[in-house]
Length: 270
Image (cartoon, rainbow, N blue to C red):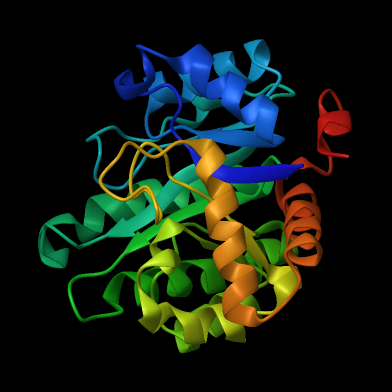
């Protein structure tokens, strides 16, 4: 089986044919982690994980730009259940709004989620998007993670979602024990090949971020979790490695990061 470690299946773009999307996943042996970006979508992610066998987990948290919400620890504690496998997506995003306008708010909600994740023994699902031609958001995220590892050690752990930065930045996350998740962008962005080859196979994940950023040969269409297979194929081709070997290791990595303590649907991953 394959696992898409990041999608938003609750989005309205799936309302018309969500059951068909899930059926295609079942037919192709694809399971999925659904990622929350707000309180409401975190609840929706949990409901999908409870209801759908192809959804093996949910993450709960506040996206740095998709909402102006605070992260209320007491409210999110009430959401904790077997289906919750991570916190986020959370981090910094300066792509559309200058850092000086959003840094204070984004750091506050990011730090709250880092602490919440560590204290509840959950991995982080990082969303880090720098301003154009910069690594500013990554620099700030790494600073926060390093700071809290001094307090919580290896309990501050997780995954860098939708990674499209440099191999130097990737190595900085790896040094902190974070995995690197590659999206479908690698199927049409040759400049990322060097990073895909540089990251150790046992420290990477594959994802779609569905319904966004569909890989080749589906560009321009709505993305969906089953397209993670195209991303896995691209990883194998870029690295010059056997597809089955790569797919099996990526599945194992996803289990290690997000599903190791979650038993209800582990059998779906074997």
